[in-house]
Image (tube, rainbow over all chains, first blue to last red; front, side, top):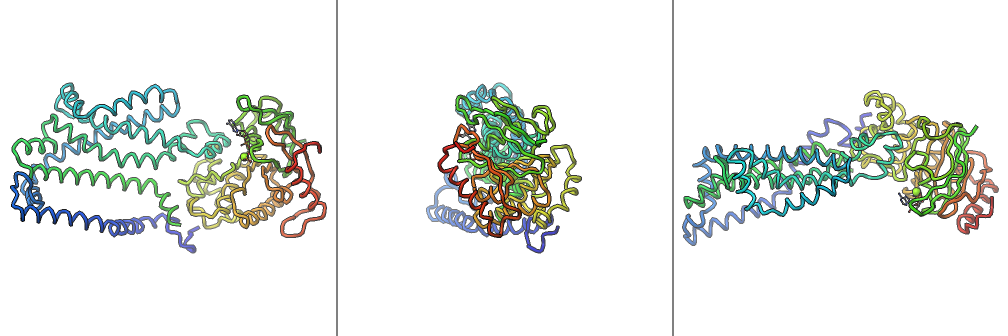
Length: 277
Length: 251
Ligand SMILES: Nc1ncnc2c1ncn2[C@@H]1O[C@H](COP(=O)(O)OP(=O)(O)OP(=O)(O)O)[C@@H](O)[C@H]1O
Ligand SMILES: [Mg+2]
C-alpha cells in the first residue's frame, strides 16, 4: 500500500512538499544563466550612462531608477493596488465568461460557428482606439478597465478551453459511454480534465496580457493606478519615475505569472508524476 | 441459452458498408475470439454491443432479450488502455463503479483487496504514466472486470505491447480466466493469441465483414508454456491461411 519499497516520490501524499522545494531549487539553478544575463545588461547600461554623461532626463541609470522606487515607494504602492484590483477583477470576469461560454459551445457546437467570427473580429480592434472609447462610454471607474482586460484575455482563454475539450482522447469517451455515463458525465470526467493543460497554458499567457491591458486602460483615463503614474511622469519629463513604475508593473506581472504556475503545479501534479518515472 | 446472440447484423457508415450479415453467438462462460484483417470492422462490431453504434440491420440478443432497453450487459476494454492520466490507478480502476453510483471511498475499499490478483499490489496510488505497458493493460483489464457485467469485450488488449510483455500478459490472462470463467469476446489479429486463449474463433472477411469461418479450438488448457497439440498447430496454420487468402468458402 505504501509503495515506499520501490521509492516512488508521487506515491505518498506527503512526498509533495519536499518535492516542491526540490522543484524550486531546480528552477533557481536553471534560472541562474538568466539572472546573470539580466545583471550583465544592467551593468552595461549603468556603465554607459556614467561614462557618456547622458542626462537623466533622457536615459536614467538603473541605480537612479532603483532610488526612485525607494523614494516614491508610497506613491507607487498606493497606485499598484488599483492596477492589481483592475487586473484581477477584469481577469476573473473574463475567465468566468470564457468558461461559461466554453461549456455552452461544447454542448451546442453550432454556437461555435455563430460566435467565433465575432470574437475573432474583437481581437482585431486596435486597443489604442478602443480604450479611449470605452473610457468615454463607461467613465473613469473600474468598469472600463474590466472590459478592456476582458477584451484582451477572453478569446485566448475561450480558445484554450474549447481546444482543450477537443483534445480529449476518443477512446476515453467511448469507454465512459460504454459504462453508461451521460454527456454531462463525460464532460466532467473526461473533457474538462483533458482541457486543464491547455487551460493553464492559456492562463499563463493571458495573465500577462491582463496587466498590460489594465495599465493601458488607466493610462487612457483613471484616477489612480500605475498607468496614471506613468502618464504623470511622462507629462512632467520624468523618465526615471516612468521606469520605476515599469519595474513595479513587471514585478506585478511576474508575481501573477508565478501564482498561475504554482496553481498549475498543484492542479496538474499528475504530469510531474509521469515525467519523474 | 446463449449469453449473447447476433443475427444477420449489417452496418454501414454513410454509404460504406462495414458489416455485412454477421451472425454469431457466445455461451455463458465461453471465451470467443474474433479474428480479422485490419479495418474490417472488428471494433465497430464491439461498438454495436456497447451501444455506441446501432446496427442498420439484424438483431442483438443478450441473455435471450433484445439489446435495447436491457440493463447494460457489457464491460468494454478499448483498443488503447484509455486510462485517464490525471487519475491514480485506483481511481481509474473504480471508474465503472463510480458511474454506477457508488461513492469513491466505498469503491476504493471494495477494489483494494483485488490489486494483488491483478499483479498491481503497491501501485494503487501511482499515475498511469508511472506504470509499464503490461501493468497498464492489467489495470485496464481490472477496470473492465470490476464493472461486474455479464460479458467482457476486449478490443486487441495486447496489441500495443512488446512481444515479451504480450506473451507474459497472455499467460496471465489464461491463468486468470481459468479461475474466473468470464464470458469474453476478444478481438485480435494475432492468430496464436486466438488459439491459445479461445474456446471458439470467428474469422471475419475484409470490409464489408462477413464471417468466413468458425473454429472450435481442440486443445485442452492451459495451452501456453507447453507445446500445442498437433490439432491446435494445424488450426493455427489453417487460420493464418484463411486470413491471408480470404477465399471465404470454408464455412
Ligand atoms: N465513425 C466512422 N465513420 C466512418 N467510417 C468509420 C467510422 N469508424 C470506423 N470507420 C471505418 O469502418 C471500418 C472498420 O473500422 P473498425 O475500427 O471497426 O476496424 P477494425 O477491424 O477494428 O480495425 P483495426 O484492426 O485496425 O482496429 C474502417 O474502414 C474504418 O475506416
Ligand atoms: Mg479496431
